[in-house]
Length: 173
Image (cartoon, rainbow, N blue to C red; front, top):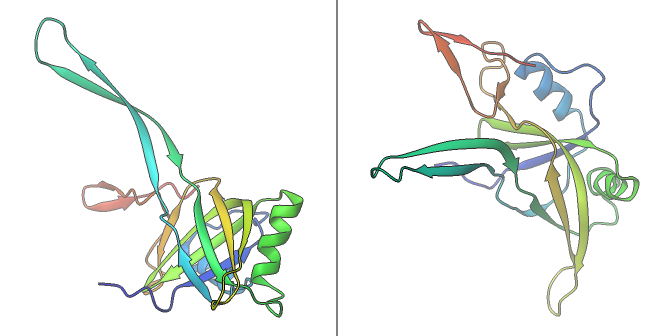
C-alpha cells in the first residue's frame, strides 16, 4: 500500500533535449516549481480503442486495438495567492496555451509527461477554503521512474518493459 499523503506535483518546462535516464528526469523535475497543497489528483489513465470482429460462420471472435488515448484529469489545490511558482505556472500555461512537463511523485515512484492546462475553476463555498481546480490534458507518453534506485533504471514508457533473455531492452526515446 502507498499512502497518498506526501504526493508532490512538479511543474516544469519542456526540456530542449529529452532526458535519457530516470536520474536526469527526477533531478530536473525536483528542481522545478512545486504545486503547493494539492487536495486531490484525478485518475491518470490510458486506454486503447478496440474493435471486435465476429465470425458469421462460428462463435470465434478477434479484437484489434487502436492507438493510446489519455484522459484529462483534475488537480485540485487550495488557492494560495503567495504560491508564486506552481499554481502560477499552471495558470500561465492555460493563458498562453503552452505545453508544460508535469511530474507527480508518490512513494518511491515518479510519473512525468508533457501536458497542457485546458481549464481552471475556482470553487467558493460557505464554511470552506477557496479551491482551484486545474484540468490537465496529458500530451504524450506517461513515463514512470523509481526514485529508489536512479542509476539502475532507465525511463519506462507507458510502464512497458521489453526483456530479451532476462535483460531489459528499453527504447528511452
